[in-house]
Amino acid sequence: MDQEKKVENSRRAGGEPIYKRKGVAFLINRASQSFRNRLFISVLTSKGHSIRLLLREWTEENSGSVTRSSEQNIDVFTVKCKTEKGRPGEFSKLLNEALIRIENDFKKDKQSAVLGTICINHISHLWFFRFYKRKRLKFIYDATEQSLPQWNFKVKLLSDLALSFTSMVELKLLKKIRVDAVTISGSRADELPRFSNICKNSQVLLTLPSMSQSPTAEETAAAEKELKGKTIAAAIGGFSNPASLEQALDVAASVVSCYENVIFLFIGKTYASRDTLKSMISAKDLEGRVFFLNGLPFKKMMAYLENSYVGLALHDTDDIWSEGTADNSMRHYVYMQAGLPIVGPEICEGAEAARKAECCLFVNTTSPVDVSGAVAYLLTHPDEARQRGERGRDAFREKYNWECERQKLVALLDAASVR
Image 1 (cartoon, rainbow, N blue to C red):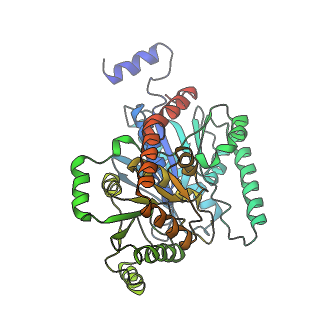
Image 2 (cartoon, rainbow, N blue to C red):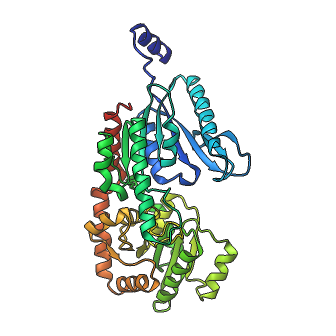
Image 3 (cartoon, rainbow, N blue to C red):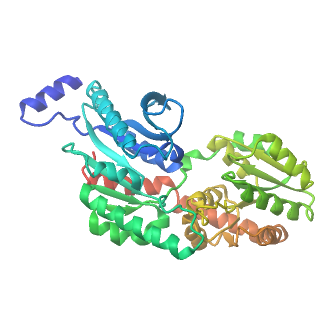
């Protein structure tokens, strides 16, 4: 029976069209198109939902408009606002326009006739839906790291008060919206009882890599050939500011001065230009000992990691968000997948898993002396380094992988009738 006949039979029986709940609008900030969002979208897609990505972007170019494009076979509607200091009502007006366009778009799609679910992952978006009057919509909220308290308070007390205030507002808005399901990042796991009081369908959901993203034997062999038998200290995640990059290069300079076969591989986007990096490397006499690789596909990155000796979860210092926990959240898990001993901080989501697996040396990662000392220790204790890496890989395969974690999300969506 084709789709239209199924729908017609459903209507004759007095029910709603069977594809009534198949349309999902996933609302995120352009800057936060994270690995976690892609995991969510993969689960929703596997459950038969049709996805429309709704992005908020602060820009001067074509501001005050809603544009449409396509990314990885998903239709994307981008709300372009004129900088964060623009008119307060501009975003709400443009977001409403975008949602109307998405609703009309779904009506043209026989596989998903109407918008049925809205996924939100930013506290600032909740305020708009406080006034959103569409009926029969399901709301899913992903409670990740707080971003509104990122004001540059010099006094920790003021920062804590800001965080407490936004958490209170967050809960009040969720209660007003009557959210149907809440997922909570591991770094906010201690807040589960508070969210459960607002929504019974609340669940801590870790951001984990997938076992299916491990490299093939051929990819690993190709990376091994490229690295030419060097001892690799790898750091993933990139650098967003000069202080973080300077600290990382200080670590490299300290280690390579004592160990001639060690090279450092920094994988991820870095704020600095190629000329700036070249100049900084030259100034610290690190030519041929430090390499930067930007924008690698995940599997290729894993091929390099599986040929590395140690994984560094370096602290990406930020003047506004000094703890940088969200930035570090996945690094421990990725190194565990690669079977590497880890040198990293205790302040992030993945640290608890690494602690249980006994695969990490915890240090103050803003201190080049502490980090280089931990790397040197692992270099001079190869048996312990290997054992730590093996324990981490075993823990990843048994528990800390997306194949295990996604079942929680599937069950949560079913409980909230997002089917």
